[in-house]
Length: 104
Image (tube, rainbow, N blue to C red; front, side, top):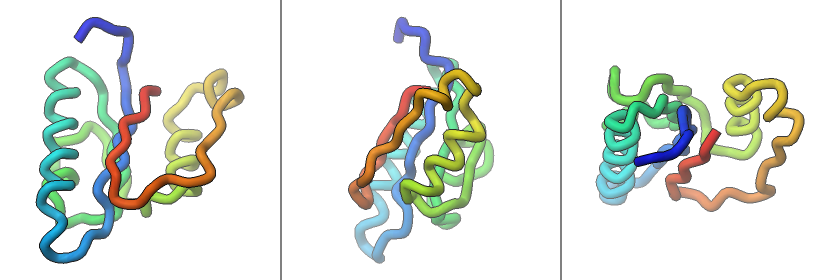
């Protein structure tokens, strides 16, 4: 991967029902592993402590918070530089149960 991406925020699989957690958790954990192999710092937001994604030492930083616009905004404000924060706007809606990778 040849680009200038140094850090990403991954919105994890969140709260899931029994039987549907596996594929969301697996894809998110594989994304984290691939990014880390490329030397990219990973920040995960996921309220579910019972996932592979939230395992110790997988992501560089884990926030056990709901994947909602409010909490995502709070993490981005904390993790982003002041210059970037001034131009940041968030989506009014984030579909549930979808893992996004936000280049920061």
